[in-house]
Amino acid sequence: MPLPDLLADLLGDLHKPDIVWQALAIVVCVLAGWGLARLMYRSFLRERAEQGGLLGAGISGFGRVLAPLLIVALLAVTKLVMERYQSVHLLRVALPLFTSLAVIRSFFYLLRRVFARRGPLGAALQTFERVFALVVWLGVAMHLTGVLPDVLAFLERTVLPVGKNKVSLADLLQGAVSIVVLMMLALWAGAALEERLMGLERVHSSLRVAMARVSRAVLILVAVLFSLSLAGLDLTVLSVFGGALGVGLGLGMQRIASNYVSGFIILLERSLTIGDPITLDKYSGKVARINTRYTVLRGADGTQTLLPNEMLITGVVLNQSATNRNQRLVTKLVVSYESNLSQLMPLLEAQPKGVARVLDEPAPNVLLNAFVADGYELELGFWIADPENGAGGPISDVNKKIYALVQSGEIKLGHPSMDTRLLDAHIASVVARGPQPGANSGH
View 1 (cartoon, one colour):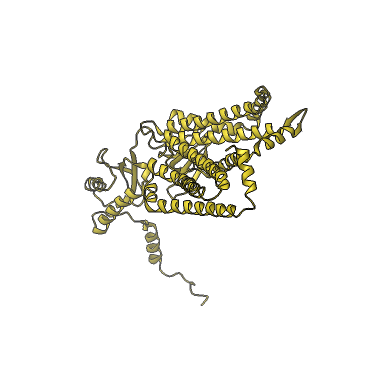
View 2: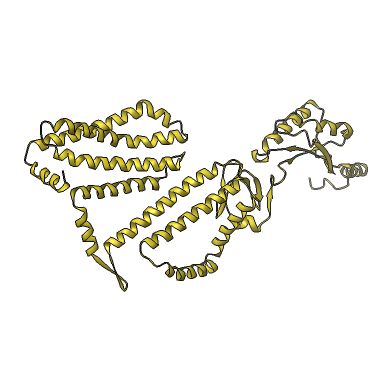
């Protein structure tokens, strides 16, 4: 039956009781389809969706498609049954509307399967899905009801003055839709590509981050240029904007541009990688994330410091694991002058052995640093191979073993001492002279 005749028959059935039964049947099919979808998802689909991975992402996305598919199936069966007893014009209009909704949901489900995202979609992409699905569904609904040509004609007739030109609402709407759709698709594809690149274990982590950042920037740039051309904007006018942007970067944005360029230099030359323990000026910690503008440095106490990338390029950076991950740790102590160093130094060298994370090679060594007032200053050095895990634990364990030797008397620590010979000589001279005459005259 042609669509205008179907709508005419539907309008003619509005005063008949058959329309009530059809509306009630549509409500029942919607509720039943939605309830069956939730029941099926909770029964045997949720456990697989919570497992994560590609299969979990696919099942999670299919859960949103299942409800409209069940509703369409129930509406089709209901129409076949009810058309034997009464007119089903309302069901014939409702069926293509819900079918279009199922097709839209299936389209986004296939997109997710193509991009195969492991994690959940961002809030912006989820909002875009809902808005785009609603707009397309409204367009299909207006087409089925015959309203779409009138709406398009109204948009073409309505003209707005933009400078010296006049632009119709249809052109503005087409440009806005093309820009939004292409930008969201570029962000979606960029996020999926970044996830794929970060999963390449054989590629260096810095190179993976650089490739992900560059690919996302290129996708966004291509989407903007392509959407502007679809909107009818001459791209040659962007030359003026490009010149102004260059002047702005050269004057007011030079530090920001410098940080961005420095970020790409760090990522490409691999001078820093995620997990490297570094020290820059008064900041120390482990590199947690390298962005194009700044680098996140996580300290031993859990605090995070955002270092501009320019500082990492122009400043002196102490990287404890750039070429050799081994790090020498030191603990110092002062022993008494009465100690026998020929026996004490080998005893101290044996203490780091057996401590967790301490290397056997290079072997621990003891150095005689200085002769201080309290005794001999000794330096016990030993090596670890994982400086990113911190140095406090091994040093503490070695100090505990030295403390046990101090408690047992095998090591005698130096104590502050005072030379009292000058004071003793003064007291002896006073005693030899005896009491002076008139010392107690005031009493």
